Image 1 (tube, rainbow, N blue to C red):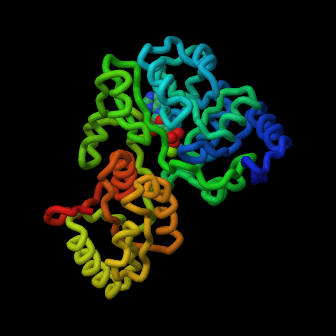
Image 2: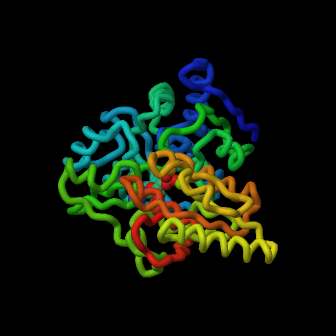
Amino acid sequence: MNTFVELYNEENRDSAVMARAGEILKNGGLVAFPTETVYGLGGDALNPEASAKIYAAKGRPSDNPLIVHIADMEALKVLVSEVPEKARLLADCFWPGPLTMIMPKSEAVPYATTGGLDTVAVRMPSHPIAYELIRSSGIYIAAPSANTSGRPSPTTAQHVYEDLNGRIDMIIDSGKVDIGLESSIVDLTGDVPTILRPGYITKEMMEKVIGPVTIDRALLADREDPNLRPKAPGMKYKHYAPKGELIIVEGQRQAVADAVNELTEKNEAAGLKTAVIASEETLSLYRAACKVSIGSREHEESIAANLYDVLRQMDEMGAERIYSESFAGGSLGAAIMNRLLKAAGHHVLRLETQKDNV
Ligand code: AMP
Ligand code: MG
């Protein structure tokens, strides 16, 4: 299959591109498109064959449900059998935006899209191009992240191309996305709303609007526990992992740098290609030949936005052993560390902690 890559953004708005993307989607084909979180791989959510194609293109296990993207509240009447009051309140505050809500599905939504579940995940993205695509195609777009299953999610069209060229019909290239981490997911089908995946919209932000919110226990465990099954099927899979072994090193910033420098020296002497992921503020403390700044601790948004690209760079460098600082602070800390811990298979080296931790 030939994958067409089309530049389309605020400055380059060729209406033929949108028309073609809409035609592809209506005919059951696949189009990758930008959202404010990461690039999505879109297909017609109400067409089971399109959903099957999404799973095949990504190599994604078919019990891992897709998120359905909508452009207005009317869509809920078609997709959801009953909209919980708390979902309306959250939608008022955070839609369009990086929040996915799990609700009971209607009969219109095929099990092929929900991975066999009676619930459906719905999001109204705020990215103008995503909005335009949903609107102009006139369909509800099922879209997981547009990466090969297991790889870091794509934050640029180039990442999508690397993973899916030849496997999908079209990629809409609108440059680098804004947030860089997937949406927060909250399940509204139980008594107390439960966060299934942390993201830009935090627990505290939701609680201000709807009162108490819990976090899926499986997310809080400090290791992958086979007895705790995450409620979002996708969260149980190994994710985002670079090919090299990734280890998170936690502790006081100089102690972390000293320990990593010592380990780097040992690895390099043994012929292991070693890389370091650090913040802009601490990068100069490391002696490794391969070291990458993930962003500034002063602007945690920059760390979130660069995380997946940095993990992909590790593979490009051929890094065999990777040490990363920890980025647990701030309001995005939970979302960033959820991804980084998964990428590291929960491999954390904890040094004695004092003040000034990194
Ligand atoms: P992605 O599309 O790559 O961002 O992944 C979507 C995430 O949403 C996966 O972790 C899914 O398991 C989760 N998800 C989608 N639909 C549901 C649902 N009905 N119930 C629970 N989790 C869901
Ligand atoms: Mg994904």
